[in-house]
Length: 38
Length: 192
Image 1 (cartoon, rainbow over the protein chains, first blue to last red):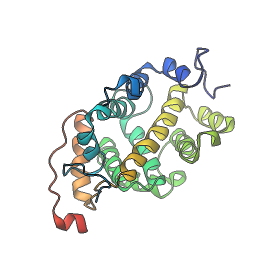
Image 2: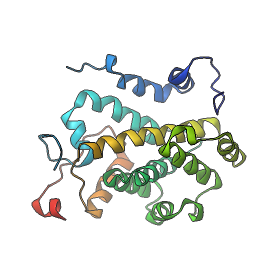
Image 3: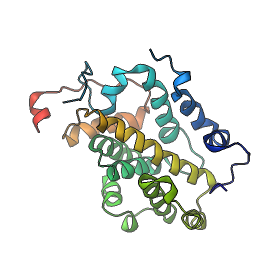
Image 4: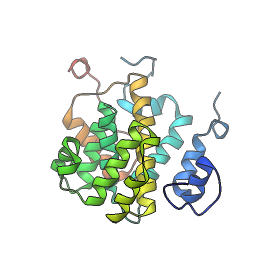
């Protein structure tokens, strides 16, 4: 069980991202598939 | 000297951000969201203290100095609080909630699984909201990334307290998304 109430059933970082969209947005953008890395 | 040729003269993470803009944008947006943007119950200064403390635990000179300077300016130009938190959060003039959050941050720095339910209960008893706990953990985790990024490429990290203070004043006022000012990287400052 998560240390805080995330109000969703998503696993791992997805649960955290759904809980806190303001920090999820840049965190999501760090994902390689979101970056135009060459 | 940095491990790779960064082709610019900026210090610390700024040299990496200029070298690799594709990864800089989301990393900078993350720090802006975590530390500078409005927060329901933690001041910018309090969030900067968490970033500063974790950077010290990771012995990242650049991050500890720059965020310590930003914290100072966010806390009404009070550098004593920053130094006292770095020396020992338990005896520093900060709230019980902040002491609990710094304890959680230190545990995240040593490994996420080291955070136990009793750490969370203690923070809650001192008034921490779930958002406070979430953000303290995220700031600690993210700064482990930033600290390792800055040290893992051996970026230039000046030993100039006045310079950090000036850069910190800019970030406290403007946030993270404005361009950094040019720093003169003289041979003298490289050797100091």
